[in-house]
Amino acid sequence: MTVSKSELAQQMAAAATLHGEFTLRSGKVSNIYFDKYRFEGDPKLLLPLAKEMAKLLPAETEIIAGLELGGVPLVTAISLETGLPAAFVRKEAKTYGTCRAIEGQDVAGMKVTFIEDVITTGGAVADAHALAVAEGADVLAVVCAIWRGEGVPMITNAPELTVLPAFTRDDLEQ
Image 1 (cartoon, one colour):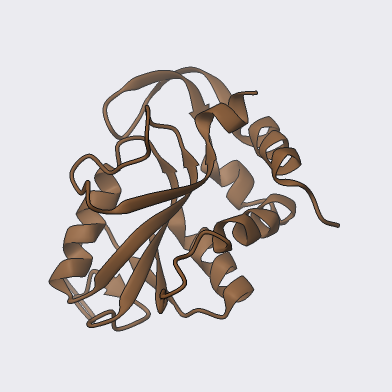
Image 2: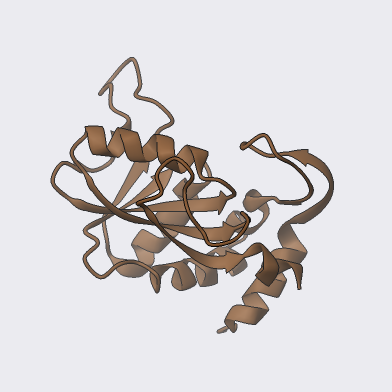
């Protein structure tokens, strides 16, 4: 069954919108919170969301890289949808095993698009960008499920990185 983008936004909002007082990663306090695990854990929402996000990938993307933890189910679903190899970006390199920050693929010299869940200011994305650049990746953009920030989507500490949201906060609050 195919759902329209507006129907998907309504379904995601119904499943994931919480009301209360929430402190975001950015430190901002919000009375609305989008609980990504409520749509990422539901295959009826995850699959159509992966299809919407896949449409936003820059054509030259060679590897998609999901940010720990919320980007992992998304990047896996988008990889299955597109056939592109998936990498997984840790918050920091492990101190054991491979001792790498990016697992699953060697990103050196590759055109990489990040996959993220919900972005407000992009602190986690900026951190991941620094890790990927250190490993030699050419990071093209970040595709996110929801842009909940103010104004034009951008990463505060990596403004050169293009942000391509499947949905905005306004899409889900209608």
